Amino acid sequence: MEATIGKKMEIPVLVTGVADGMPINLSVNYASTGVACGHETPQVLTVKDGKVLLPFTVSDQLPSGTYNICVCLAWRSDIRVGMPGPCTPLFPLKVLPPAK
Image (cartoon, rainbow, N blue to C red; front, side):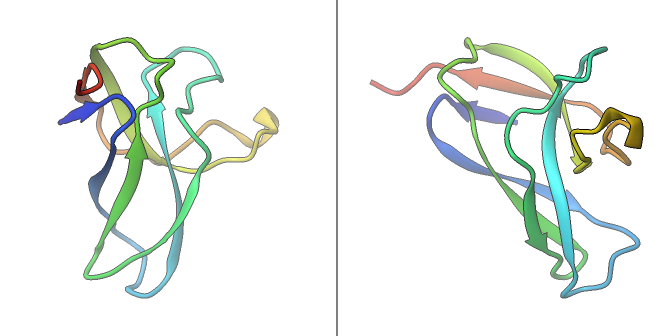
């Protein structure tokens, strides 16, 4: 996938185990060994036909480059509850500089 800094896009996610019409709380996460892996605030989306489109905007704080990311069920900030998950497999996100 490719994303331009500051431009909104959507990440298509196949959802299993959640009925159509039900809400699901998802977040975009970077591959990291620390707990500060979330990109933005989790979003509540409604499953339709077994899928959701997760809105995503790359912050101008992230330099251009390629990053490994995944989409996860959101988790609480209390790390005693656990890390994000389950998650999609990691996939590359190529971050492009803002359009001029």
